[in-house]
Length: 400
Image (cartoon, rainbow, N blue to C red; front, side, top):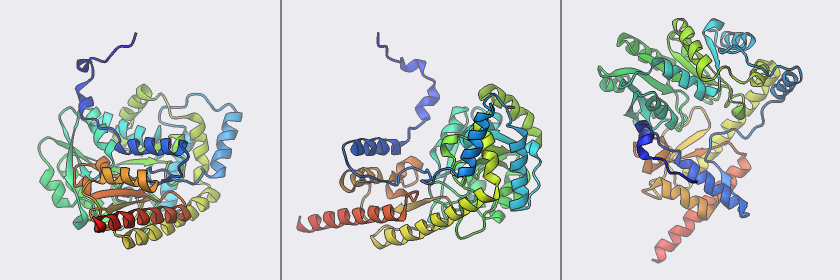
């Protein structure tokens, strides 16, 4: 017998947890592909490169050798040490392995951090636009996400004045990202230090999402740990190391919180995937780093190409993306509804992009996000299709 869910039986927090609107576009795109249409996918943030071969070989060896059982909740010691060594060799930062927590993806890491820090009714400051799951995670733990509208005047990042103005007695902490999704913009180490000093003085917590660390193009890659020791770092093997489906990430937490995180990890996840952890040991080998650095330069080439082409056909790019693999483009020259515009491009130009609606309430109708995680040849095809569609629409409007 089919039953319906009584609305009163669903936790009230679910009313505030929004779905991904881009999934509607992805679902429609997949349906069109099943009907024989060729779709250029620029809607999701997943690298098109395969996982580097040394990582795959390490996973195969781990499985062949029976390393498929539970591991310590905080991760295998070898990987925690390897991550600590990586901070030392690449960034010159000494991070004790005891502070490194291997997690079930960066999402699992952020869930652990907020489970440890969020209190019912306490506010967390986040940027708008920003990655939508972050505000949903805060809400899931009965915290209150409080948006800071950011725009082109501040490179889509908050200022110290923004944090001070939005801070209240109810504020528990700040959750930011650098490089950021959807804009690709970054915070400088000076900005991060200034924010950390302010937040510390106010008795709050500072969580920084660094999951796109390494994927930077006009500035040197960096970590907040170079200037601050008490910032919570959320990291991932997904983006720079191209391990999205492996679901592996890590946290760097202040020493006094590690036991609390361990208790949570034991209860919520038991442990991260064992094969993925042993595979990730190969992520820090010289051969792997050479591969991902070559791919980083290809992402830069794609960014430069797509930025120029989108500008040429009438989009405005008001903040040049310095990292990640996104362009947050102003589409107001063509529409006052970015979601409808994205759906229209899918239907009539066979190009899938993400609408601003997914990233907050700060002028979402004005922006769309392009993900340059496909080849330049496919990017060129997407631009040509969009240009043909826009030209056709303009000609029709002139006739009318």
